[in-house]
View 1 (tube, rainbow, N blue to C red):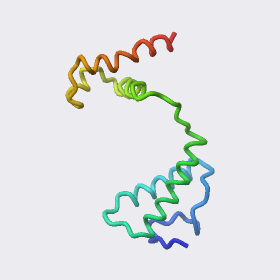
View 2 (view 1 turned 180 degrees about the horizontal axis):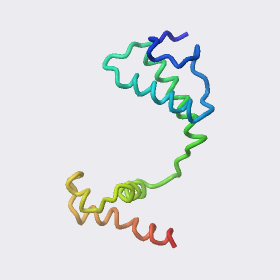
View 3 (view 1 turned 90 degrees about the horizontal axis):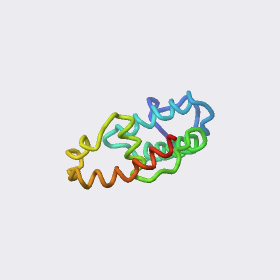
View 4 (view 1 turned 120 degrees about the vertical axis):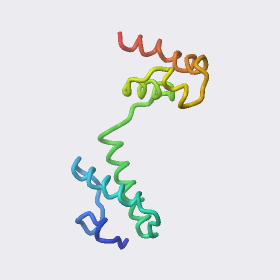
Length: 115
């Protein structure tokens, strides 16, 4: 059995498959604490791997992410954060014309999918 310091313990002797949002949030919280450690022990790393596996399995079943091209993902993130093409140019160091050609290619897809 993996021995973990009490401050990371989940209240059960060993992690179990996640069956609720509350449990999911708890596992995420513990994983976040473990990930923020500067020098985790080998046991803590194993424990984090177990938590990640359980979290991924739960998220795949309950929070599936649809397939999307990189450009579609970028466009969705831009829409969610109310960004325009010119806002990204300084961040990525791309020329506006290159960025426009990349992101512009998805504009037609977005317009037709909304109709």
